[in-house]
Image 1 (tube, rainbow, N blue to C red):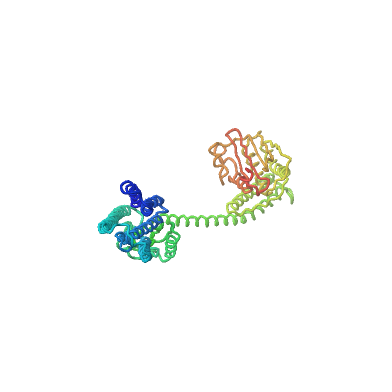
Image 2 (tube, rainbow, N blue to C red; image 1 turned 90 degrees about the horizontal axis):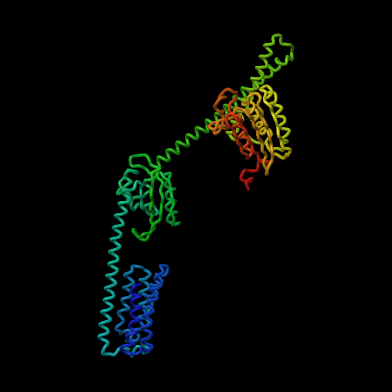
Length: 542
């Protein structure tokens, strides 16, 4: 729009010079000068990129009518300014924009038709210019039109050469970048016809770029993945946004490579007005091989876990049957139900057999429960519980063991009720915590069990003044088959499943477990359970 700005400035300057050196312009001259000055407005309008096309079209139409106006004042179709109407279509053609070419030609045709229509009216029979000066003006106007046309042609030719040079530089830079890239870069049509391939094709596909250009990309994609690539290219072209696909590219020497392509639509006119797809592909074969290996390992682990669960279920059944018989018959012998045992040692041995059988049966039950929890097959059956009654029964169960070790049991129980939980799971939690506390508390020690309710939560704590647990052991305590190391390592019976079962049962209810301990200072274990299993920690925080 530089020409429009200069035209506007020329019209304003001409108006001032005409008024100073010739005479005050009449309404005919004033319209001409002001009309030419108004062209500066189109230059201002073109400053907005969104209005650039409208500004060009408006300027062309305005200039055409302006020249037609001058022609109507200087002889109509015989006016010396008529050649300028023929310059406008040529100016539009040089832009190579179909719309501007049609608009310029249409505006010129309209101006000529308009002059032809007003010629019979006689409005152009009295030319504004004197007859003696018509030849000189005609010559000057023709030279001006020729100069304008030459300048326009030179400007467009120069711009075209600069664009071609820039395109060549861009192509060289693009070639240098793509040659140095490890990724495969392809340019193709939405139908898959390859226009360009980077040098990485030799390493990734086994073919030089020249062997790929002009062929279909689908020739180098595994048959099972061609539909995926086709959908990706079509989506990128029609939706005009980046898409991606992971396909298998066939190698020239056999086999294939997994390639992940990012497909971006481009419309830079390098190969015409059609939209092309720039596809940047990265070799993901190593990642896919790792994922496949990981999937196989996961499958093997799941099958091994299933086999373990099945084995534990079968083992528990096979062991419980003879153990129940051993426990039952040893109990009969211990209680001398069918007569006195003449040798006291036999009665003692019967008692030991009975106690060992009960202990072994409890261990098998723990292992089976942990297996069910890990397999996600342990189901809770929540019900309203009287915690005071349940804790009392658990204390009675461990009372004999505590008395044998000369450990004192105390209870500080809240009177509130309302806990909804699985009876068997809560009983298991209590017995495991109490058994652990008795196991690791020396003679003369004290164990306290306490409960409370607060803000919809049931709090259960078991504290002892036993040997305690070291900081390093505390981090791993609660994992299956783990026992604390230290002075009592393997000095006490058990599989190490007690605290692990407690933690699992508490978390299955939506609660949490806290353990505080220090060597020589005892251990405190707290279990926090929601009053109803449906209540979560996040809901309680709200």
